[in-house]
Image (cartoon, rainbow, N blue to C red):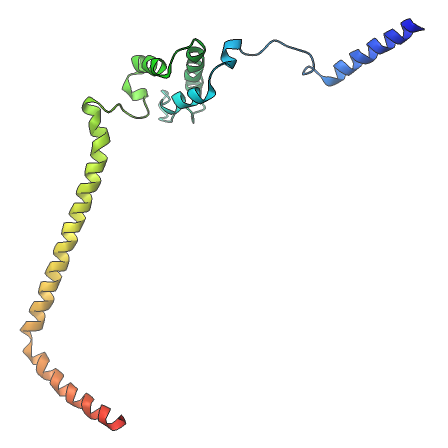
Length: 172
């Protein structure tokens, strides 16, 4: 009787394992153990500083094509080997050049990429200021010239002022 109960218990355990599906059984990890130790924040930071090199021009962290996946795999592998952010960035620069960087380094000719937008905005603002200032100045001069050039209008106004005074006296 005990053997029958043992067999029944074994069958019920096997049925439970089969019902639970493959997730119940232990399996080998999908990725190597080193990849699990990679700092996700550092990986994300590196991805945000690199441009995908398939021609889409997107930042690596936002791109979802095969080239981006390949570059991410390189980053994870190098982080798993213990390389720093600067070493990994240097590796990609040595392969693709400065165009792989999301922001050009502030040195040499690349300084113009940092300075030019600010100079252009400042210069455009000054140009708009001076153009508007001239238009307002010339408009004021023109109005002053028109006021002084037409003395007949002053005489006509005195005629209307007399009529206005007469009308106001009727109602006051």
